[in-house]
Image 1 (cartoon, one colour):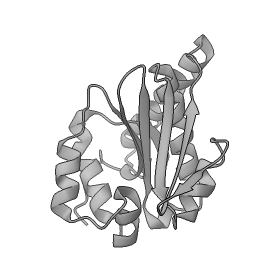
Image 2 (cartoon, helix red, strand yellow):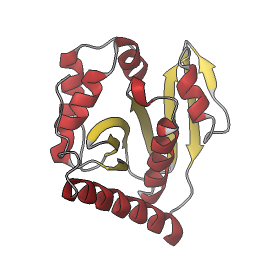
Image 3 (spheres, helix red, strand yellow):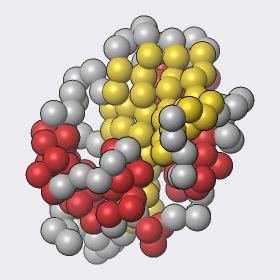
Image 4 (cartoon, one colour):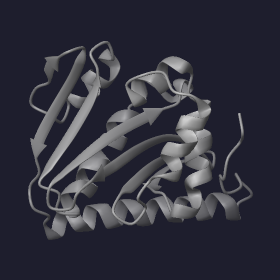
Length: 186
């Protein structure tokens, strides 16, 4: 069973495990250069769980994809998306970015920003589903989007998706499915 929902701060170890499972090329794509395990651990440790949001994609109770939102409220939010290789090309990155944009809108960020390496065609295809165009400069591709103000419908859409995700995970556990995902270590 799969679910997509916001992570709790207590799930930082699951995010760390997810990022550490990424192969070197996916790590470089996420962080815009090669990074060590220690750098990834420092990144997760530094996440602002009060002002930021991390949306997670769970497969059988294990975190397999994430969209991180970081920014200044009422200003710009940057969104970064990661999906483990065996889950790629299934629409998961698109779903994560879409949910991240909805959450950013509902948190009243004015602008959403994405950036990736110019060679990261996979993410560029995902970004172009939401952003009008990508700008290419100095080996990077980036896009900005002015976000609409939240509406009752957008707030209800986020709340409904979150409720169903939690309900699905609780049902899976109750029916003897996967244990809560803290990490799998490798």
